[in-house]
Image (cartoon, rainbow, N blue to C red):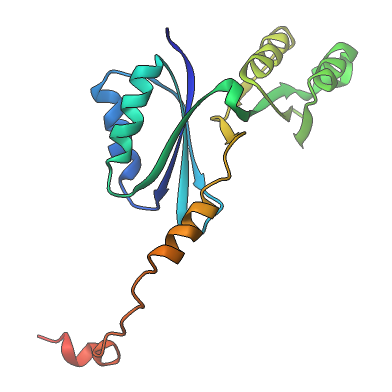
Length: 195
């Protein structure tokens, strides 16, 4: 049975990796609901948070396929119950409506929206929450002249995970990298690389 899964991919920060990962999904004709890329808790490691709607069997195969990529360190997949997640949204509403309609102000407070920009012609509010809450506020603002609406991709942390930091430290302790080798010709660049 299909359900929503959040796939967390820890990678090295390499150019073109997101394209290679996206190709894995497109070859299988799987739609990505949302994707977020950001630095992880360990320097030089990035984290992709990908949301899809699929069966566990398909998600398991996807995770294994993604892990085969050279720059990928680890892949996890979780259901909504196994993670803590949020999305952010911004709403642009006519300032006149907010000033004149008490109902709109109450509605924004009810959803925990905060003003980001206030101008004569419009005001931008932001809020965080689950997709249903964010969409509900957008729908409630429609009759009041919602000008623009944008929602971010999901960000999530795994409830049972210790993160990648501990694993990286253990790996480094077990197999320390080679010390960097100084290039003996580095300070003679103009003399070495001339035609």
